[in-house]
Image 1 (cartoon, helix red, strand yellow):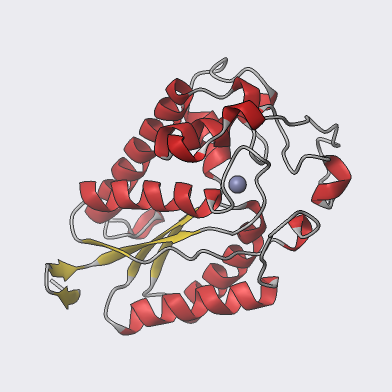
Image 2: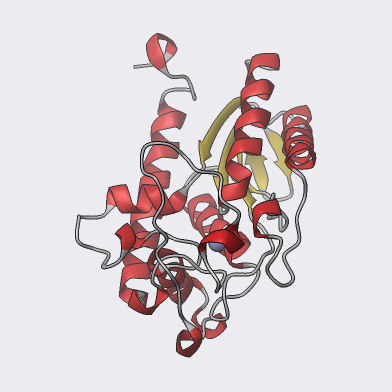
Length: 244
Ligand SMILES: [Zn+2]
């Protein structure tokens, strides 16, 4: 078996949680995105074989949230470099299978650039990315699970429900308030967050419940565990090269 030897044993793959530090309304903590990514990553690493849980990246690309209090941000270019260099470090230690779990919308494009370019330069480094858990959770759960805006939104029904599952003592439901913006559907409008919400929240967090959070968390963890097990069986190859 190839892999990296730590005190606990050999690791043949790693999971990297990526978050952000930014305003999530008055009802959620600044570290929400990092907490969610970390919680999912921890649970997956516990339930699959030989997966190294990497430290959570607490900062992300949050420039479009910067008008809200205590929002910290890296530039997109910086985040591309950070993600690339973390992947390069993992790779240099002999681990060539990586799952990235992202908790923040602004990180999606930098992760895409970093991981695409890394794979082209190092085809032996296998990388999979859960880039938007909030969208995936909606696809995994039955229609009608959410009451407002399909559960979407920054600090909205879905994210607040996840936080009620993960860190309920950090959620203040009495302060929950949001707005559902009207945005074009087929073409992406590059909003600045303060243009679409006065609260720093989109969606409807007042519809959040811990029950919905449990459903989302369980569905995502089960899905990721099955995914990693399937990838292990297929040598982290896809297409005709996969070991069927
Ligand atoms: Zn968030």
